[in-house]
Image (cartoon, rainbow, N blue to C red; front, top):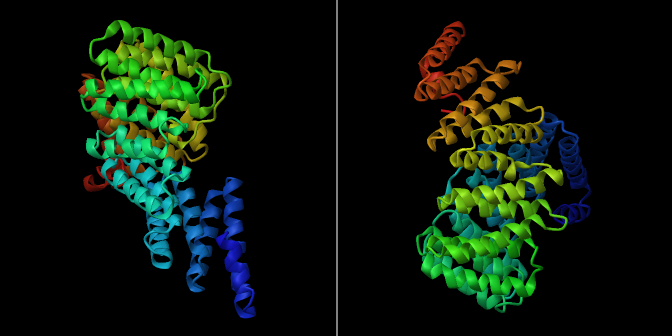
Length: 442
């Protein structure tokens, strides 16, 4: 819309028409190259288009910044993607004001990047800002407002956020949904029960969870993943209160329906993965394991193509299996995690190595040391075979792996890796202050 409008207005001024056409051609080049997988050329074309847009003060600059943010996100260059989105937001605030609905998209995208960076405080701040804009700009019964409520609510559920704010969203959604008339309310209702449960308030969560089940039965088929989610959450809340008999009955019902889902989509699978994660957060490892056992075959049979947001599903399942004591199956799931990462990153081997380095550090912080070692090993092997890998990055990866083996008690292997890292740093003249802080994998 903005591109068509800007070109049509500029067509009234012949001297500016060529600039507009050049700008649009640069953008089309960048987008086409992006779709064909030529990411380096795409970056250069989009940067050129942004420079041209700045010169002629074109509103298309916002769209170009969003395109470039997409590219950087795909490359795993999240800091640069954030800067592009922040610039787009600043442009929109200056040109359209602080309440423009066009701000919603870049704000939500920026929030997603903060999720990847595990900066939950900033993520929630952005989601609240998006909700404020939505409430100011649209009517109270707008489906768009309910979608924004759902998005913010889901973010709050998994961060243990201010309970009063979660309840406020729940009450608003109840009024705006007409109680049981929309499909979003049962999910919001169920997520509020999860938020209460994660804050240790399972007694308060139970009536909310039951309300979610009652509502879902009126708007969903029983084998719909959203209905299954509500039953699974009720089972979790009941179990947390020691009501084992009813909890087991509800949980078995949820698992049975999950296995019978007709034509499950990727969203269905990811929704149930979220349920498994919540059980794991509540230290209900056996139940989390059973949910993964039900949902992972759906992913495999349906040949879902992994994307950035769900590329670590098998890794999360591997953690649960490891915690449950099934180390052999955990290692198999880890291999599937590597396969998904290969699909997502493709030829961008350095980006994948950096991602695995950060993932290994995260696993190590959670004391999954053997899984962390396997992930670090994969990163080391990728860096060793990548022709454009920086020696400093290889040294960082080697030292991380060495430290992990040392914590596992394998001193012999740790010393060999430390020696290899030292030899490489001496060969390439890498000083300590460089190879302990190369890139983002400190």
